[in-house]
Structures are given as C-alpha cells and as structure tokens.
Image (cartoon, rainbow, N blue to C red; front, top):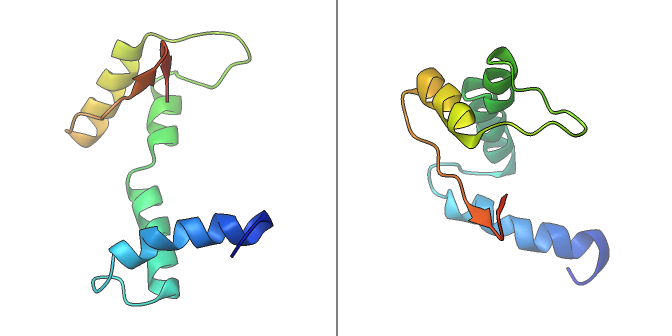
Length: 86
C-alpha cells in the first residue's frame, strides 16, 4: 500500500487490528463503528444544543463541552494546537 488510496488504507488498518480479538473481521469492525457512531452521535448532540457548523461563527468551547457532558455523562477530550481545536 504505497501512495494514493492504498497508503491511506495501509495506515487505517492499524485501527481494526487493535480491536482484535473483540472485533473478529472487517465486517464486524465496520458494523461496530456504525453502532458506536449512532449510539454516541456527537454531531446530533451538538446540533440539538444549537451548535450548527456555520461559515464564520465561532462557539465557546465551554458550551460545546457542556453539551457533550450532559448528553453522555462523560467529559470529552479536547486537543488544541496553536490556538485551534484539532
């Protein structure tokens, strides 16, 4: 997997292999990923709290963290680099 799309998938395969033996194959990995996405749909939580991706508006990070904490009863890990959230 060198160059182009192959290098992307060559890099991504590590995520699936780290989940073994709990997730046995590619299908189960993909299915688990979808289930987690729908169970913990952060995009929906933020939209429901009024945080909709705008073209220029910025939102306070504290409000975003609170929305996630209220929905999931857990604190998110937010990483910033050079003043911007990654």
